[in-house]
Image 1 (cartoon, rainbow over the protein chains, first blue to last red):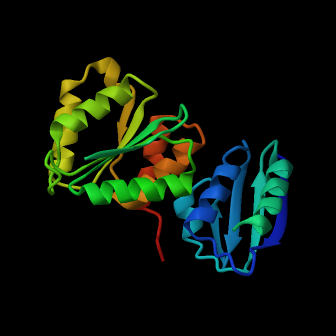
Image 2: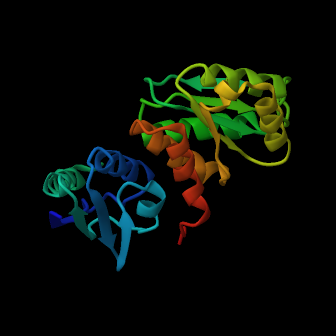
Length: 87
Length: 139
């Protein structure tokens, strides 16, 4: 099964709090691939806002986005472009 | 009191709380996080606006949603649960097929259900997302 992993940093002044997390989860949910985001040694399902919020990722933190499934590459690339633009 | 955030064809989120402020504040918060696509109904407080639940209003909102795009229902506790149960007893089997009641904490469950609903999922899937709130650690 295709898989893809990309590392990307949150903007320095944007923690992964409720609104940005909602944006991320809605974007991840448009792909069929399983998508996960890791930070602070934890790995969360990118399609679950509660899971993403539990990462407690602060601004500037590096996120590892890993996806698996037919559209994994597109999913990882889409989220990697979206994360630095979160506000 | 019932406040409504208009949505866009996705399943409706119905928030039943003893407090109109809790229901409407949560509706506002969920709409900000999930975006404008989800229709959110805040059915909080008694008929006169005091603390309590308005069973007639709850039934009306459940019936309207069941005959529309379907709904996931979130409750706080006590008479909110009883009001929803009583309303479900009034609905036909066909109407019940379009509703899911989430057994989940109200705030976390509503946010999870709203975000799920915004992706176009079914009411049952939105309820499952809400119920994850029971097992996902907050800290």
